[in-house]
Length: 455
Image (cartoon, rainbow, N blue to C red; front, side, top):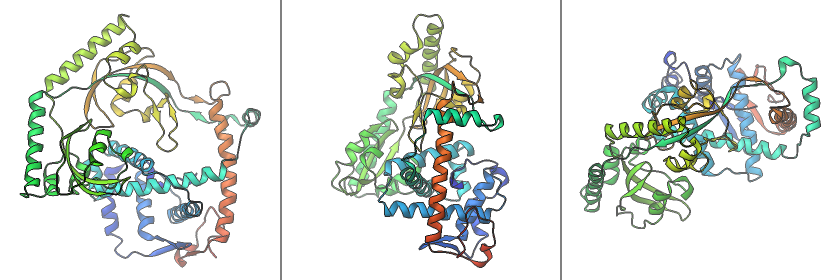
């Protein structure tokens, strides 16, 4: 309902200036709104306005819509502070990374994301985390305010019976996809080369020859932390790969470099910055072994052979996924891929096409239900590593107007959301009346959604 524009997907980038260029045209900043004791700056509004335009979101009056949305968010966040409502760092990081990866796919590369924002990746990630925390906190307060609202099946049927046909929600095409993966592995001599290089780095730091942060900037293949000297930032155990966390939390001497740690991302060494008991901050250097082309070819050949055996009914896709797949997330689920909402964390086997990884979506779009693809290469969204996969289209639900037989839950949610919005609107109207607000004179004569902003 009040989703901030900064989280909308990016598009049409080639025709618009970067955020850095936009800021350069606004040399003098100013406070345009005050809500309680929280200011809203002209520069904030301009950034959101630019992002709305890039997303193709046509705003009739951005200088009314955007500051009002920011003001509304501040009211919810203030309520969260009053009620001690918090979101975990893990939840924030999950949503921030989801949004970053979405925008990187839209822009084509991490380098393009940095060029667009005019900032290094580490700073961009911090901004996404701040935005994600504000959004999740707002949603948590809304949930608290509306948790007592219930909708019965009879109320849903009554609502649907009275709904004009052109107002019935449209359910986009959804698919259920099964996957078998093969992760090509580096040759032993390549792993030994990487390990020897990391041992050399550790020796140079431990002997005082050089600084860990300097080496991280020069050599680490974790581009997100390399520019910041390899610094990961304060993190809980559940925010780090298990193998990485085990070593990071065991470090006690900031002058010493850890042993080599292997994770799904590659091989690491790290150095302690700070340990607060439940959180730790370290620097690390990540090196990724190169995988020979012949290993990819072998994986493709192996998967194509598995696919041929499935088509010949020698065994089922489900049996092959359980025994032969390298993907531990789907291996015990008959290969079935699962979509997890970054906001609600609700899980479903049904994907809208835009929620599938791009390479997989392209292949799935060409398959008939029950058909198994040829093997192809894609990128593991979790680790960034290139892998080989085959997929099966288990089910396709074509886009359609919602109906009671197939989409009862969707229609029930429509009724629920309408009632929730009524409660939230009433709460906001009262909150605006009792909260100090001040709007700069030239920003007051606008058509706002809510009355009472101008005191």
